[in-house]
Image (cartoon, rainbow, N blue to C red; front, top):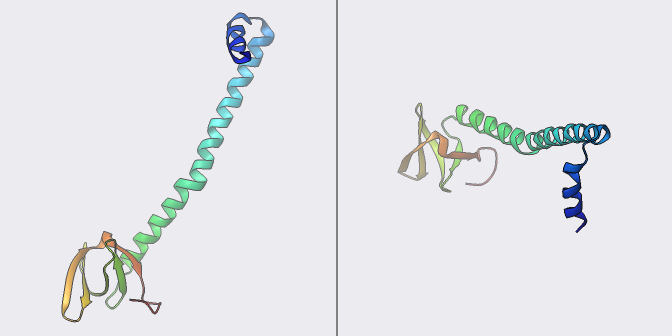
Length: 113
């Protein structure tokens, strides 16, 4: 009920003090929106860009013998690298060709795969 009374009283307040308060309210709203975008950038957009750059670096530095995993979960060893594709040996004598963008991990340094 107080909220409804507040809404109805707003158009009636047309003196100079009320107009000054309205302008201050607009500034605080603008500051809050800017802060919201800054927080979104810091916690959502920036980390995603950093992760994307790391993936691009990983894909550009692939070399024969690297152990990788595809997006589909296929583990293999890099045999041959072309511009946009990579041949991966998934078992002895079994090789598949995949897009570079489908490679997500490198296990060359670890004991897995």
